[in-house]
Length: 312
Length: 310
Image (spheres, rainbow over the protein chains, first blue to last red):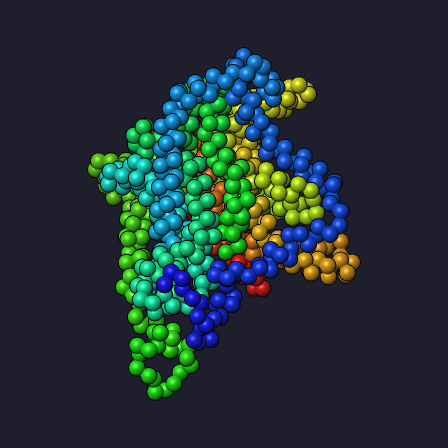
C-alpha cells in the first residue's frame, strides 16, 4: 500500500481539494510562481534601485563586518569607531573564547536541544495535526484545534514564573524539559500550518491504503507523513532557528550551569567579563557561525520554507 | 469503502453525504491516541502554569514557602506602582513605533526586491541574514555599536548630541532598542511581504499601466489592497511580538539607565525571580495577558475588511 494508486474518486467530493493551494501529490505548476516573479524581467533592470538596495544592504553587512574585525583584534586596537581592519590579527581570541565561554559544552547543549526539539516536533505535531484535520467535523477535535490555537495569544510572561517552578518540581529543569517545552509550545503555530496543508491532500490516497489493509497508524506514517515533506521543512526550519537562538526559556528553565545553551552562556559571559570586548566578539562570532553556515549552505530552502509557512 | 459497511438508506441522500456520515460515525480509535499525549502534555506544561499563575496572582506568595490569599490587593497595588506603569508606557511606546517602522521598511524592501533589479537572489539572501541570528548576541553587538562606534563617529564629525552613548540617555535609550528590534525582525516580515507580493497577478499591473496609472497609483490601488491580508497578519504578529520584548532590552540596557527601558516582561522576570514578588508579578502578568488579547482583537477588528479574509 506504500505505492498507493490514485484511484478516481468514487464520489464528487473534491471541493476542498480543488481549493487547496497546490496539490501535494501531483504538484501542478503553481500559478503564482510561474506567473509573477519574473513577469517584470522583460525590460531592462532598474540600476538605480539596484544601487539603492545594495547600499541599504550595508545596514546588515556593516554590523556583521564589525563582529568579524573586532573578533580578530587585540584589545589595544579598539580605538575610535572600531571599523579599522585588524593589524596584527589575533587568532588566539577564538581559542580563548572557546575555553572561557565553555563553547564546546554550550554548543553541544544547544545542538542537543535544537535537534531534539526539531525531531520531536516534526514527529508529533504533524501527527496531532493529521488527527485534527481528518476529524474537524467532530466537536471534540474541533474544540482541540481551537484550544491549541488560542494559546497563540497567551503571552509567555504569564507562564514564565510558574512553568519554571513546575519543571523544577518535575525534575525536567534540564535539556529534556526544554525539548518538551519547545515541542509543546510550538504546537499552536505548527498545527495551524499543518492542518491547512493536510486539508489539501486528497482522502482517496488514504482510502486506497485502507482497502489494502493498512490501519490508521500505517496510513499516517507511510502515506501522509512522506507527503508532508514541504511543510516538515518549513516547521523544521522555524523550530530550529527558534530553539537555537532562544534566550528566555533556557534562562528561566535551566538550573544547572552545565546545561546552559549558547545564548545563555553569552549572557553569563557578558555579566562576568563585560569589558573584554575582543574576546566577547570572538565568542559572538562562534555562537553565530553554526546557524549562519547552515543558512548560507541552504539559503534557498530556508527562505522558501519560511515563505511557504507564510502563504498557508 | 466506508459506505459499504453501512446499511443502505431508504431516504437516499446525496452520495457524498453518505460518505461523510460514514466516516464521522466511526472515528478510528487511533485518532484519539494520536492527540491524547499531545493534549496531556500541552495541558500540563501550558494550561496548568497559566491557571496556577492566575491562582497565585491572588496571593502574597514570594514563590516558595507559605502564602495567604490577599484578594485583589495585588491588582490594586499595580495601578499605583510607578515602576510597573512606566514599564507599560515604555513597552507600548516601543512596540507601536517598532511595529510601524518594521512594516513600512519591510514592505518597502520587499517591493524593491520584487521589482526589476539585479542580484535579486543575493540581495534577498543578505536581507534575510538577521532572521538566523540570536537577538541576545546581535544585541550585544549593537550595544557596542551604540556605546563606542557611534559616539566615536559623532565626535569625529563634531556632533555634540551623539558624542555620548544614547544608551546612557534616559530619553533616547529606547530609540536604540527600537533600531535593534527593527533590524532583527524586518527580515522575517520582508519574507512574508515577498510571499504576499508574489500572489498579485502581473495582469493587474499591465491593466493599470494601460489605464495610465503611475507607480504610486499602482501601489495604492493594486498592490496594497491585494496584500491587505498579509499586512493585517504582519501588523498583529509584530505588535504581539514586540509587546513581549525581553531579549533586546537585556542585551542593550538591562532596563537602564535606572528603570527607563524596563519592559513589562523584564519587570515580571526581575520582580518574580529576583525580587520575591511572585504573586504580585503574576497579577501583573495576568493584566498583561488581558492587554495583549484585547489589543490583538482590536487590531483584527480595525484592520479586518469585509472583502478580504486574513
